[in-house]
Length: 326
Image 1 (cartoon, rainbow, N blue to C red):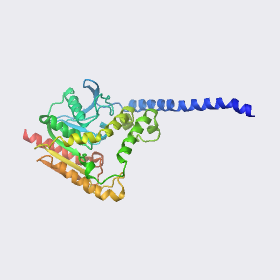
Image 2: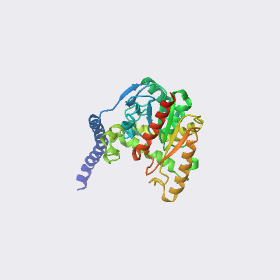
Image 3: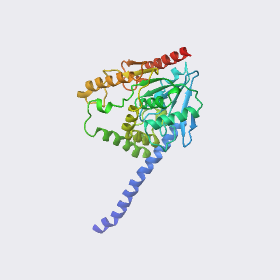
Image 4: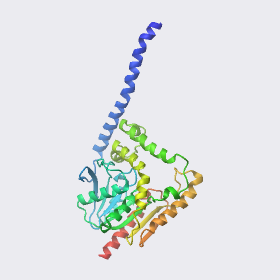
């Protein structure tokens, strides 16, 4: 019996090794076939624009000036604006896009910081032939990008809408998170970066129920860019903080409901976090002498999804003001 057992041992070991090696390969096939199926069913809207070292995805609809550019937050693609873009397109040209490495855009060889995002956005919209000035709409981390864009290309900007924007000093002003929170936040993205190529997030249902969303965001490039943006988030915040104010540029700051409950915040810190966030949003509105603030009642961080009417109205207001001045 011992001789038979010894003869079978190498076979069992070999079989287990094959299974271990085959699992990632099977996951790789599953991920890529599923992505191909999603993209065939949901073709990329808009077009790819050559910006030199890579191509970037831009989707423009509607007509009329000044063009409105919608900029998504950390880890998000153009898809996050699908509720508001069709409505804005009824009264002005409006464009959503994917940062390099996100959605349908190629990856960029440059550092993934807000200053680079602003420069790449400038290259994109000029290569696409959009005529300035533009109204820039930035959600969350993209608030850093549009502030830096305005600082570098002020004559090209007609106004700004900040949608529950990040604040450069939020790390020092929000209630302290438990130790290791920053590292865990980055590690979560790095885990997705490792497991997306073998289809694990898709298999577990973490890519969402929408095939169009999966087509844009459930990709290795997207996961890699997400991790890179998290690693440089503090650097981007510092860059935005050094950008200065917005002078007299028309500015509307949209903020989530002050009693919103964020599942990522411990219950005992929720009230203090909301108060601190409210103060940070008030400060953002003071970046311009023409800044105003609007609270989106019954909305969380994604105001463009929870209260699209608030975003649409803010854009409409700045468009009307610009046209009245001309």
